Picture 1 (cartoon, rainbow, N blue to C red):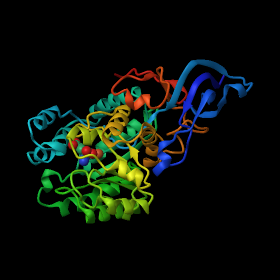
Picture 2: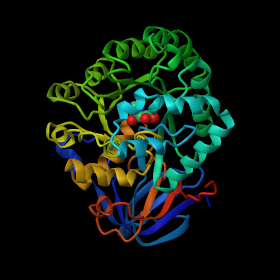
Picture 3: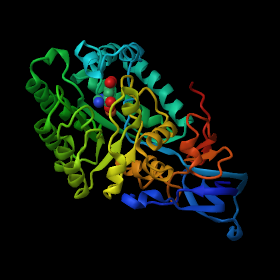
Picture 4: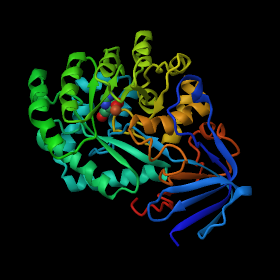
Length: 415
Ligand code: NIG
Ligand code: FE
């Protein structure tokens, strides 16, 4: 039988499909005492409803035994293809060095570039696949992955090939992002212009020719790239149909939000140092502020002004920023806990940000982000969860009974 009918679902949480802004972020629609019909072949949801209106249907029936379900998390910002962890920098920061001081001593992004350049495509692929399986086990059902640890033609293409190989075999949707403008590589140390010339004239055309990237990203920050660089690189990316994203206002106010809005970026990410005029730019745009609680927490940065943004009427999304330097975790459940505790946002706001709004921040809102007809049947079966507040509240606890991907329980054979 190609259809599966789940019965006796305690609650289906998050059935909303629209991008939520301002006060809309504090509510989540749900169906109590529900059933859900799924297509085994497409892996998609056919229909859903209340048990007292259950259809008389030829399908394999699975009794969910009064457990609640919610959509899998959508992680719209990661750098999960990298060679090696960087726990020494973690210890250096404990001893008082800042992220910028570590970077200026050759650590940071350039440290990862060194190791990633040396590693073969196959080895990078194997390591990244383990991480992908790990985050799916933690309930992630769609993920965006960036390059940015290659910073030359050969190595950026290698990273993007790895991401595209993951796309080919992944059970969950993946979007790929070209982040050539992540840092200035050491061979261009005093020649940022030369490196941007290489990005625009050599790397980007190859990326576009091979159709390797859905998005193009840039780190807009003092000592990295500035407003004009965002405009120049993104104008080129858009000529190839590649959609902009920007790492903005993470370590200082660097006008990345303004530049991101100007080039119609789908998201501006981090935004710790965003100010009121940035809120105004965002309000009049379709650019989504994508909040990365793991990086702010792990680096001890000031909290991004998330509460103020939502009160201003903006919609925010949440992602993990999984990477070896500033956020060595892809645990989206933990991101919602950090966001609630640190930014004083409600569990509903955090869960909307990490599901449906994050799906909008990576252009997959038509296939994931909520439990709705025609979307992939990617959902988390929750352990004894009576309400959604319990999820961010349960900091670091395992609240997952099962993860279902494409209408099937996910079995991780790859760890
Ligand atoms: O999103 N801010 C720039 N890039 C990453 C950090 C990457 C790294 O430290 O390796 C981030 O935080
Ligand atoms: Fe990042």
